[in-house]
Length: 245
Length: 111
Image (cartoon, rainbow over all chains, first blue to last red; front, top):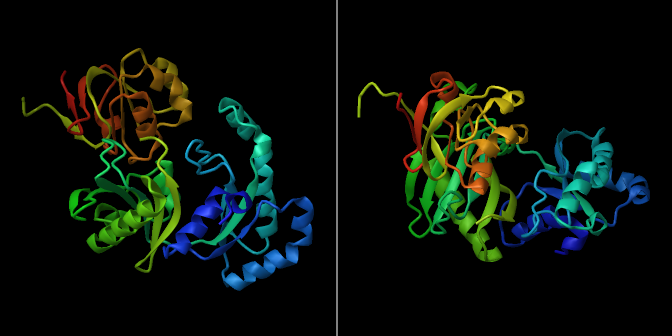
């Protein structure tokens, strides 16, 4: 898929789909959209939304420089969760506008990048009602051991794990044998009893490990994945190369 | 080891081992209070804690995992870090002399 049209996030989701990885259904508004096209395309966009058959979606920015190996714009552009039909166009517009924020300009300056080189696409995607979600690295980010997979799992939506506001479980898996080498079960406060137990089952830990290995093989570099489990189905939400190893 | 020495356990987010005096910061606004080479102890860090983080010899947090801000910044700066201890900010007090052993994932109070 052409990154120039769909942005880093959009492209990586498309690529994941092409290798048979389960991603939440959705559609991408390419970088060719501008204010005019957005207004003209309103009906088309709402139709695509209706076709998803959902009440709520996640609207995620997908910049052409984002998720690239050298520049991690992670978290710099907007993502909106729980967007319904009435807010959809507005939130899409905000994603496109976030390209012009002072924060982005400052970030580009610090990296000697021309902000005009960056184009924005928007991914509209099903919001999973995930029971468990988290991250997965196909290398140990602490020791840099590329023979290990590290997984973090928390109850609920992925944002809580990634933002550091909760303490997730941590599992270490041997890449060759798929053996679970180590498990640290956390106490996820405010979740009562289930917060104190193992959050991702051994079976799903291994399934996630296998998926992460296929994804790493495809991209030929250590990867940082965001995943979620809904009704025992494992979905990959995002995949990007690990920028610091 | 004296069995009365309190031990705090957490996840190793950045390897290393240091001794130092504790500074518990409950608010980012108090970052100036941390002195050079003290051990930053907090619930979780964020960009707003940078003034303290830059001077700290190590970071210990109550919350968070491998992708939390404290974990990532510690690895970037190459200082020891232990996250997800649950209780560090409750058990540790300003001035406590501790050993942050981020090879075992343990914080030991020495005095």
